[in-house]
Amino acid sequence: MLPSSRRLWALLPLLPLLLLFALAGCAEREEPASASAGGGNGFPVTLRPSGAPEVTLEAAPERIVSLSPSTTETLYAVGAGEQVVAADDQSTYPEQAPRTSLSGLNIDPEAIASHNPDLVIVESDLENKLSKALAKTGTKTLVLPAPATLRDAYTQFELVGKATGHAKEGAELARRTEAEISKLVADTPKTELSYYHELDPSFYSVTSATFIGGVYDLFGLRNIADQDDPNALGGYPQLSAEHILRADPDLIFLADTNCCGQSADTVAERPGWDTLTAVRQGRVVAVGDDIASRWGPRLVDFVRTVSSTVRDAGR
Image (cartoon, rainbow, N blue to C red):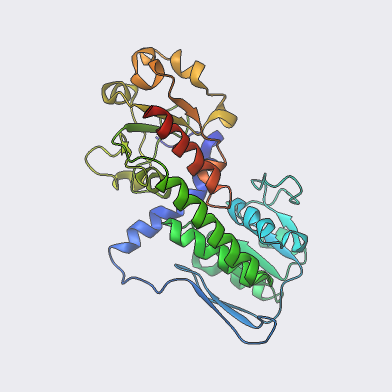
């Protein structure tokens, strides 16, 4: 059974990880993402994203279309917001982002081209169909797949900065984000508490083999969705209510508050859930649908919420 269409987009930013996991077993490890610049202003620059084709930009793009909510956030964070002329329908942050009906799922090259971009950024481009179509108009396509690790996310901040003529700001964003997350982790006592991360009310979750699960791993938390194989189902299993009740998680994190109206109160009203340790001890925490499913600069907010919850549980 697939997640409801209502939650599909919350999962989509993470689904490219499934491909990464599949390829990891049959391909040699790729070189880390990087960029090399020529001229004194940083251009031309050749960008080499991990898991995607390299792209050479001759000059700083003036009209950018972002079809990745995470990248939209990063573009504004590095100071390239004024260069963004269109963003996809899921780019809800920041508020001033030029959100349109463009879709990063059902990509329409003609609709994208109507915005006259000189750079388009997407999360995936199967068989390079988009890049080939846009190349006919002289538009470059930069593919930034979902990162597998925090380090990959920091590297993408740097790449976005270099791609837009804001290399210094991109490097600073990566440095600052890493420093803030490292401090939060260092200041939080390690624990062996168990947790359940909810993607939607039908009990889709994430395992420790995912990017999200990796964040929880930083704090030593034990994922009840791992079961016998964290990699099963690409790391996005649908659990049963019976399994969750048996596992009795110490902490519950809700990433379906905005989409689906879930809260500590609605969780407590589910049959039998009022007996769970997390419910009885008031440890059902909203993490924000978008924040917990993206790898932009607000990743720090997600880590801060987990850190605060773990510290409170240890008191």
